[in-house]
Length: 155
Image (cartoon, rainbow, N blue to C red; front, side, top):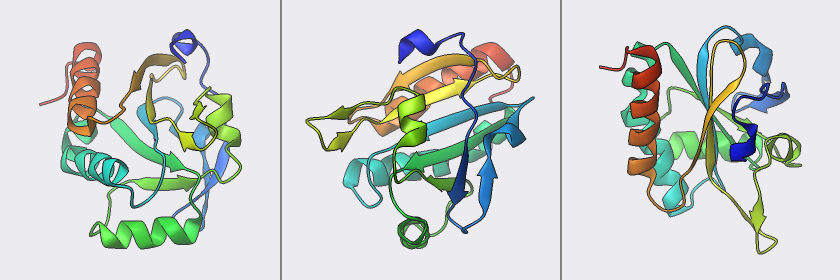
């Protein structure tokens, strides 16, 4: 996945947690973080989504949009967001893993999707790739640090 750094960000269209079509091209011209996670409700993914929620204002202050993507259905995303007390960003349903495949996000042992994040710049190029394994707080902190180094706006 790190080989994607500097490459054009793949464009895609997926349903969000409200059942609306989300077009990735709507974010062209802005910084964005696309984070792929394994499963709604799993402990690590839950912590990851909550950490992105807790730090959301910092992403916004840097002009960065946060978007979560997993294989879960729209209905699963709706339940998950409700369980977490709402999230200030979209969760997208990639049930066939078509978008995850475009980004090269692997599946381990045939059934465990990797958790990876892609920082995309306003020119629609992948600026940085982050793998988060089991440390979601550290993962989000690394993204914010990198975002701050390139925008100077994270406060």
